[in-house]
Amino acid sequence: MTFTEKINLEITTAMKARNEADLRALRSIKAALLLAATSEGAGEAITEEQALKIVQKLAKQRKESLDIFTQQNRPDLAAKEQEELTVFERYLPKPMGDEEIAAQLKELLLANNISTAADFGKAMPLAMKHLAGKADGKKISELLKQILN
Image: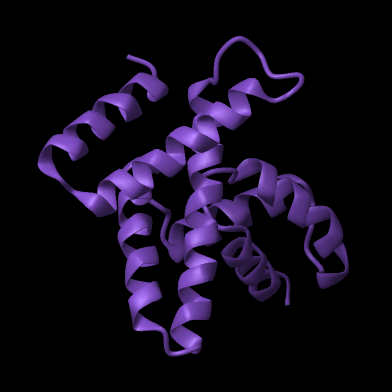
């Protein structure tokens, strides 16, 4: 079963259960997948990796919106964003802990002979490529700065 088929099945289940929060989030995933599939230069079908990146992007957008709504004291809008974020997180791999990320960064730095803060510009692209989909870019940057300093 492809990721798109799985989402379509989940939409049907959410409709039958009358679960508005799940339905809203699943429909946004489906819309993003359709946009990606029909965009110029797209292949025949969306791969699992592409679908994962799309869901990660949607989750990141919801996190940013959630932060903004929380800062602006809008609990009604923040609650909707949190509901959708919870649904997106079901389809994402479990995020790595700080210790795991730091351990992998140290191995990566050692393997590439990077040891000073001046080499941050070299280290960050390597780290982002190595930890793509496993950790947030902000967290990678923060830990990398701590390790190099």
